[in-house]
Every structure is written in structure tokens, then in C-alpha cells.
Image (cartoon, rainbow, N blue to C red; front, top):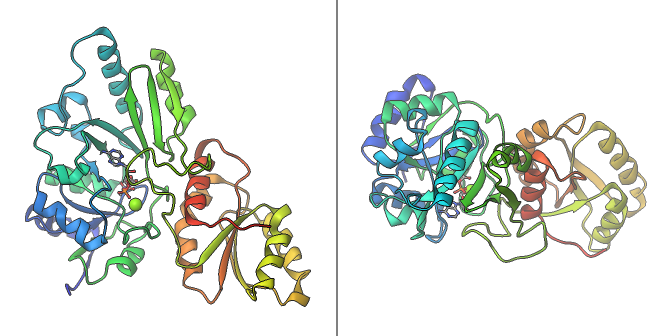
Length: 368
Ligand code: TXA
Ligand code: MG
């Protein structure tokens, strides 16, 4: 059992030293907190898997400083290798990649690139691509620039659990298992980065995030590249397109169900038949919360009770919903409620897509 020390951004140098000697540090990013280790050291990276109880088949994202954010620099640093050379199409693929980097880095976009030989296989679970991202969080960037090393960092939660969006969440997940948490305040975005793979003629989205399909299209279009969404869960297809994109993920311990306002009453009745009556609800606007309360009140005879309510945004604003989503799921999971019911997003574009993806991975299906 290690004592976990919470560092403020003033103590950045302690975090730098710890990472240089291959210790783990949980770090803030604009999406979620990450559990970081020197990506060039297999022994440092192996500590991540141990602390998280993460299976080795799930690859890690490598975070680099802003001053490394071009293809040339990543090649020079040995993080990636040049498989783009030769043929005209390959050259175009390289141009699209460089253009996406210029447009979205620093920011919540992870790009899969041909892995350089110096990156330990452990980082990519033996895959030939490595996921690279340049985080925009100020404290995280200061850390990376001082360190001048790439950091492998998955979300700083135990495997399969809800991603942490502030330093306290990290402590709840990993206290006593890691030496340091660098506190950079609450995460601005709240859901993990968009993960893409660029091939000849197309950009595939393997995990939706804050960089949306239409954002990517605005760049890809110039090069006549298509953007396609690979959707294992939302399509109801359980086959995982990318290792680690497991259907059950980001999950609270409690049972969680998704409901449209029209389905809510049926679901509550179904639960009351199973003697489940203490309910926590998640809604996206004051309007839905009020309607849901009316539905709840109409079932007093069935002893249905909303023991906890989470209002993620007052007015269906996806940026606010995403920011509050994981923190509120965590709070309701620790409450006296027996189950959690969340409003189901009605829109599927932009950030709503990422929100819907995380909610469906966190929830179970219920027959009504
Ligand atoms: O926003 C984020 O991406 C956060 C912060 C900390 O940067 N990180 C994060 O990491 O969400 P993690 O480990 O929880 O999710 C990484 C996922 C993997 O599960 C996998 O789906 C995909 O990214 N991934 C990473 N490297 C890959 C690779 N080489 N091939 C295919 N998928 C990869
Ligand atoms: Mg994760």
C-alpha cells in the first residue's frame, strides 16, 4: 500500500521527477484524468496495468508535448515510423494526417499511426498502430513540455469503471495504488477523446468524442476523404472494432437503464414489479426533470420514489451534459438508490453522439 500524494500545479517539478524515475502520476487532461507513465519504458508502463487491473489486450494512448505535434517531429522522436512513403495515395494520406493534426491538436483527438520500434509493445498491446494525442489542458502541457517524454495514459479509473473528471474521483479509484495525483481542477470536456484511424480514402472514427464527424469532415473533404463512424454499440452490434472498445465499459456498479420520457412509466412499473422502488434519475433539462417528476409522482401507489436526481444541464446543452456526466453517474452510484435511470439522448450528432455512446456502454437493456 503506497500513500497517494495530491500535488498542486505549483508542485509540477515533483511530478516531472516521479515520471522520469518511471513512477506513475495521475494527470489532468481536458477530457478525463489519465494515469501516466513514461511511454518509452516497459517497466513504467507495466505499473499502469497493475494499478488499474487492466487487461494487457487494451492498448494505451500516448500523450506528447505541443512542440512535438507534427508528423516530422513524431518520426524524429521514434514514436512513429514512416509507412506513408511511396505511391501518390500514400502521400495524400500523409497530407490529410498532417492537416488533421494542425486543425485539432492540441485537443481531444487521438490519431492511430504506425508505431515506431522504440515504443514498447506493451503500450499498443502488440498492435502495429500507436494512438497519439496532444492534450490541450494547460497544466498537462506544462508537464509534458518540462518532461520532454511521451506519456502513456489510460483514463485513471480501475478497469471498466467510470472515468474520473476531477482529482477526488482519481483518489476514489486509485488511492493507495499510485504515488501521485497532479490536481489540475475539473476536466472541461468530461468525455474521452475521439479516436480515429486514417486509411487510403477515409477516416474512421473508432470512438466518438468532442471532435465530431462533421468537424473531421470539414478537413477531410478538402482531400476527397470520407469520414465513417464505426459504431459497435449504437448499432446493436457487439463486435468490437478496436481492442478495448468493450460494450460494457464506463459502468457504475448499480444497474442503469436508459429511457425516453415516453418509456419512463413502463420502466418504473416493471422495476416496481421486481420490488425495486428507490430510483436515481439523470436528466438533461429542467423541462424533462419536471416531466419525470410528474411521472414518478403518479406512481406513489407503487411506492416509486426518486431518491436522487441529477440535472446535467438546465437546457439540453451537450457540452454541459458531457462535463457533468461521469461525476453525476459516480455520485448516484454511491447513493442509496437501487437503480439509475437516465434520459436517452434524442439527438445523435456532435457531442450527443459521444454522450449516447458512453450512456449505452454504462447501461443494461430492459424489456418493457
Ligand atoms: O481522452 C482520452 O483519450 C483519455 C485521456 C486520459 O487522454 N484517455 C483514454 O484512454 O480514454 P483509455 O485507455 O481509457 O482508452 C483508450 C482506448 C482504448 O481502449 C482503445 O479503444 C483505443 O483507445 N486505442 C488506443 N490505442 C489503440 C490502438 N493502437 N489501436 C486501436 N485502438 C486503440
Ligand atoms: Mg478508459
